[in-house]
Image 1: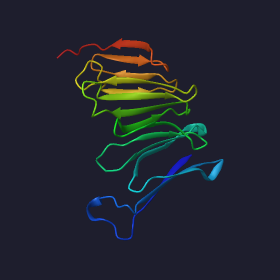
Image 2: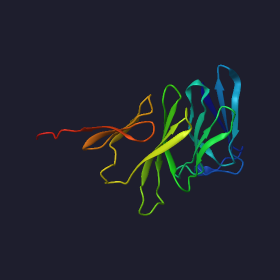
Image 3: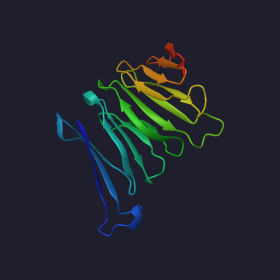
Image 4: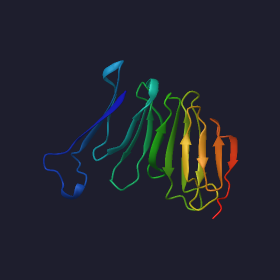
Length: 186
């Protein structure tokens, strides 16, 4: 399956890459069962696609869009019928990345929360598409839980690597494992 993104600019484009009200962007989700398009999404004028990710086995289409190139991005998960199953607003959280499992059962969304004073600055939202549930791993920069890396496993396990440990959370967000990293001798 694939997502084909088409952006049409007005004949008299703006210098400097600014958006024009005449811009139009269309996302078409294609798969073998629907070669003419399973779903077509018309974005509002001036919006562009940051990332479009069709999920395996026709489970849906994950889409992140933005208004300004260096600005925040929203996130939306569309179901096979085109309905919006989940959405974030870029005024609250900016989508940085989207990762899906190869089996189409789980999706992780890396989010930044720049406007949350006194709360977590970042999070990974994990969506269980089989059961329709979700949970979030959150952290702030410089905190003990800040990851150096994270990975979503095929089983829905979220693996978080911090400088001190490797943490694993099951598909429900419950701790599933902890491995302490050894200190390196210098």
